Amino acid sequence: MYGFGKNKRIVLFDTLMEQVHDDEILAILGHELGHWKLGHTLTNFVVTQAYTGAAFYCFSICYKSTALYEAFGFEGAGVPTMIALLLFFQTLWAPVDKVLSFLLTVHSRRCEFQADKFSADLDMSKDLQSGLCKIHLENLGAMCPDFLYSTYHYSHPPLVERLSAMMMEDKKSK
Image (cartoon, rainbow, N blue to C red):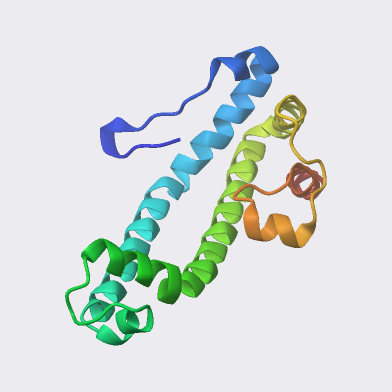
């Protein structure tokens, strides 16, 4: 799911059409529509713009400081902008980026669970579960990765976590 206003698109690749049945495609489509209905695309756009704005605002504050450049052997205030950008993003911004990237990953995973629930609320839980399993097997995804590693690095929750969440929702609704 991507796009805004009248230019929204949901892309289903031809390989998906070969991997799953029609009901599973509808469930996956329900998941993607959940992203749209719940405003995930717009939220992600705003968050990304705020992140970029904050990064360049902090860079603008540090840009005139000669102490950073002198620490790396550059004399005076005549440091090229590209060098200044590289030094800023690789030294000062790097720890901030790690924290913010983790928060963005947590947000992305939360959105995936919400979109799964949206599809499940359309009575497509079983089809979504079987479709996700087929996709996961076909793409050789990690079945049960380390919890901490996947929490930090994976924008989508592991299959086992998604299936567990959907099964718990199914039990609640019965």
